[in-house]
Image (cartoon, rainbow, N blue to C red; front, side):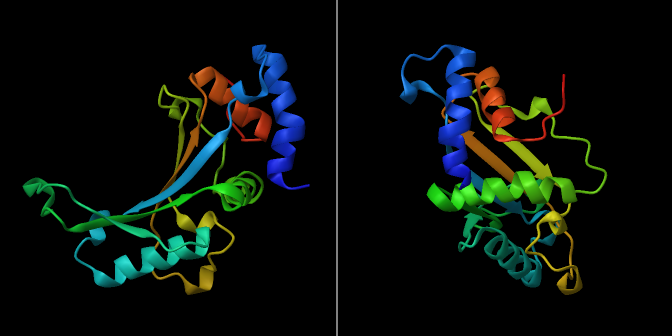
Length: 179
């Protein structure tokens, strides 16, 4: 059974019961997943940009889009139009496969993993996870690593509140900490 089928057959009825939804289309779902890497200290290093691009491509299976600075910030030595990171937005089957891998493989591989924080909801039903080391993902082979960098995963849901989004993610199997 695919993860999307699991959502439809197992999670949707639970959410309908929990929140008393009359219509199946009112039940929150996951709309998209974005994976972001900021260059940070490696802004001037072309090799670092190449490494982060390869990492994103390997983790998500898609070519990343380079993100550019909108305006200059002298304190960070950033000029407008300068490449400051990369991102990939996942939809459809690839998104569901990525979420299953994130929950079942990647999170348990994180060093000293205690569970995901419940405070990472943005108030509109979206959830962000920060990884300090990209080596937690199974596609990254530890013998090929030159630089360890972090990345951010944002799960966009159709939930209206944090409570609905939290229930959705818990039913999907996200290892959220108990409050």
